Image (cartoon, rainbow, N blue to C red; front, side):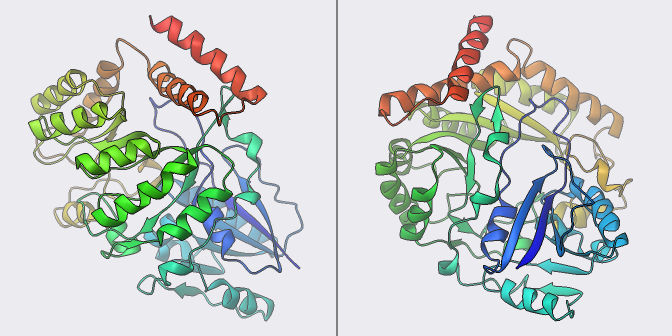
Length: 425
């Protein structure tokens, strides 16, 4: 038996964001690819301390965000100083592979299914490769099975007594290639949906009634999307996701399948966005706008108009970030070529700190407008109150479905929600 400590390094939330933590997705997917002889001890450093004296055979560090990488390197250096071998994986490892190699015995790039048996064999024979690179060789999507959620300490993932969502994915890859996004590099431009039957089987193993479908976009294959939502209806789950196709039939089925709210990029003040948000609301689906500030067509006036527009269309929540040029994105390539990036300190790549020279204002002014955006949108009602309205909505839906058995923690959360709602009236 190999004792394997899998660590998810800590990372700071956005400055203005309500502090809560979701069970991470990458580590539980990776753990599912490990052979049975590997005993996994998972540590989410956002909620637990790392025991550097724990006798382990191998350490794995799973990094999702650029802002995790320097902490991941620190953790690795401490274990390696004790003679423990360290392997890195995850999205941020792929984005920062060359730098990470200096802190690693091995770096795994790409998707792990069907690959970890060889890695474990190499480790046992003391011949770990410096790099396992499968970035351009994704495994067949139909072999992707249920994640290893049993490695999570479930009691850690509550906020104010309310159980947080579990993360799950129904597809990989993305046929879009958005300016600030690295998914085209990480998962390829080909949309790879999981077989609906396989995905439903995974959902049936998840006890939590609240889910986050972490797919980059569900709006990539209409036929598959319709089949997916039809199959989800009997499960009576409640879920949030990134965009759903703006199609009445799709939206109707999504609502019936338990769509709770969506993350929708709001990039302008057009009627297209106004009507899209309205259609979500008409189907009983809430909307959290994701608003990226600092694009080259943004001016101080246009940013202020955008924030007024968000209030006008009655978004349920909004999350503001500044353009951040992550490696292997078109944004990084353009800004680097134009010599506009003035910081490569990865601890500043938190999406709430300006690290490049905007086109139509100073970096300091964009930072001020970022602060203004959060304050203006939430001036009448704080973010935690708006968030609890969404939580209250899902609790009421669960009761109506008669599938919700309140736990003591959830009862406490309901009480908190009622208190929060009363304070907002």
